[in-house]
Amino acid sequence: MEFIKKENNYSKLIRTEILFTPLLIILPITVSFLLIFDWYIRGFLENNTVMYNGELIIGVVILIVNFIFDIPFIKSLKAFSKKNG
Image (tube, rainbow, N blue to C red; front, side):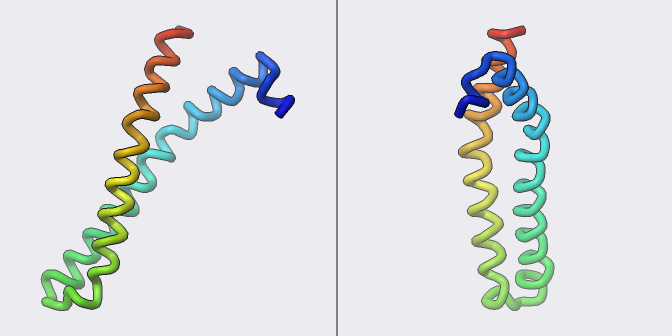
C-alpha cells in the first residue's frame, strides 16, 4: 500500500486508469453485442432459440452491468479531470 500513498505514484495510477478507460468500456459492450448478434442470427432467424438463449442472457447481463458501472466511473473521471485540470 506504500505505492498508493505516495503523491507522485497517485497521479500515475490515475493516468493508467484514464488510459484503460476506452478498453474497460468498449470491450464488454463489443462482447455483449457479439453475443446478442449471434443469438439473433443462429437462434432467432433459424427458429432455434432454445439452444442460444444462454448467449442472449449473458449478453444482456454484460451490457446492463457494464452500463451500471461505467456511467458512475466516467462521471468520476470527468469530475476528477475538472478538479485537477
